[in-house]
Image (tube, rainbow, N blue to C red):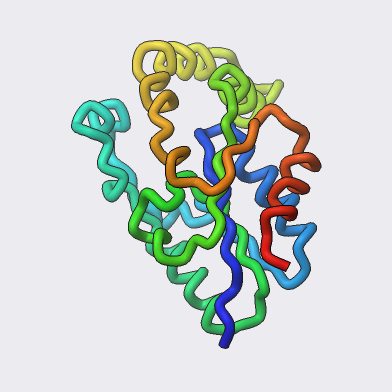
Length: 178
């Protein structure tokens, strides 16, 4: 059984992880895609992100055992040449540090990430009340979390998150072994 080459796409929320991971998956034959958000039922999070960050931001307080089990099963089945992870924690978290072959950081400006989150999370038909609450929380507390990009230092590629998805995909494909 050969281990597939595992690519992790890392970024802040709204940084473009999912869109790029999906495009990369569609471009790689014999690939599987696993998205952190798809395992919401088995993911664990700190109850208060701001307090978590103030305590030192231990990434081990986040966990995604269901995602790891699914990836392990895909590896065991041996059907994939590549596995693409839409995974915000990169090599900094013990859950996947032993598997990731190529870690990609999307360096997305915070204003772009916030605009993407607004467009994603608040459809045109929604009321503006929740949006105002989210923006106020971001300005008072959440921005500090977004500024903490320690994952960047352990990534193999640091890409400009404002670039077109096709360009980002091509840069990753160029970094893959033949």
